[in-house]
Amino acid sequence: MKSLGFYIHIPFCVKKCYYCDFNSYSNYNELKKEYVECLIKEMHLYKSKFEDIILDTIYIGGGTPTCLEETLLEKILGSCFEIFKISDMCEISIESNPGTLSRKMLKALKNCGINRLSIGLQSWEDEQLKQLGRIHTKDQFLENFNAARQEGFNNINIDLMFSLPGQSLKQWEHTLENIIELETEHISCYSLKIEENTKFYEDYQNHKLHLPDEELDRRMYQKAVQMLGERKYNHYEISNFAKKGFECRHNLLYWKGKEYIGIGAGAHSYLNHKRYSNVCSPPEYIRKVKEQILPIDEVTVLTKEDQMAEYMFLNLRLKEGVNAQEFLERFNVELSSIFGHQLSRFVQLGLMEQKEQTYRLTARGIDVSNQIFIEFI
Image (tube, rainbow, N blue to C red; front, top):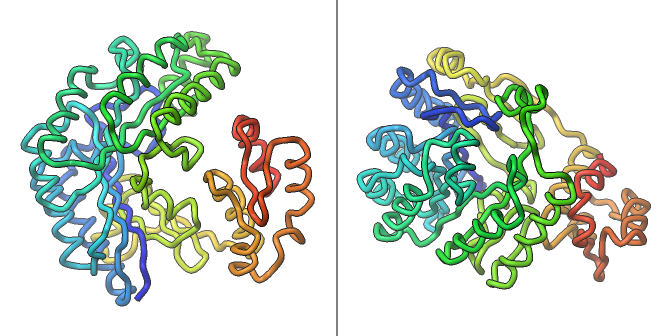
């Protein structure tokens, strides 16, 4: 029986944040019930194609999944358990935003099997939250976090962003200090990126957005590494920190090149060395699923060279790095014969370190990781 990850995309939001370029919408609320019915239809379509699979991780992302009614989320999870075989140790995660986590919602999530909660806080400063277009305050986050603890959630991730417009290093430290005090199990720290088709992109183009420079951005990142390391958080991936045993197993599937199914508008799947992406538009997604066909928009077949390149830049995101023996077992070719020149050069430049058969990024290498990854494509 094949073990897979399972991703469920919920494209609805209360409000679109100013920096967000994810496949999410605040103007399709009338489609929520019909969309959930189509998610279940898509589950059945996959079940008819893959009889011998067991789900090892389930991840409900968005958008803001918790802007759905509790009954709809219960229907989605209930259908997962009815349609598929689920591992007894399955990690079942859901993304959420403060302001959407009522006590009623948290009880429903717990009762339907959610055992990992991810909360998008982003900043401890209310003024910055307002500037980002967030729907909540710091106090609402605290109220939701404490309620989640009281409802028995003992695996909580908090998403944070740094390099925000006008943000100082002291403000970032203040955010980190307060989050660390909560003793949450997992913390994700992302540098703000200005993406096209967002309000921030428009503001940036019109010189209305003033961002920290690259040096301050790197100092903020290094401050997070230092402070979280001092509190025994394992820096297991470039942007992710976890207490021992609380690394996100679903995301590790992506980074380790494992297979997964994604359902919903704009969701991606990786099966048999092929990448599939669903149509992004929720109305178009609903139309296709109602015709009893998988709503796939694009299929990319990965060559062996593609697979080797992905192995390199995905595994180099991880603290454990790339391993020559694992590479040989997976691709039946020596790592050094394919990427020996690049690896040697990066070791000489101090951007990578080699320990026996393993190569991983140094602190300096992480700072220029995107440039390094390009060298393997």
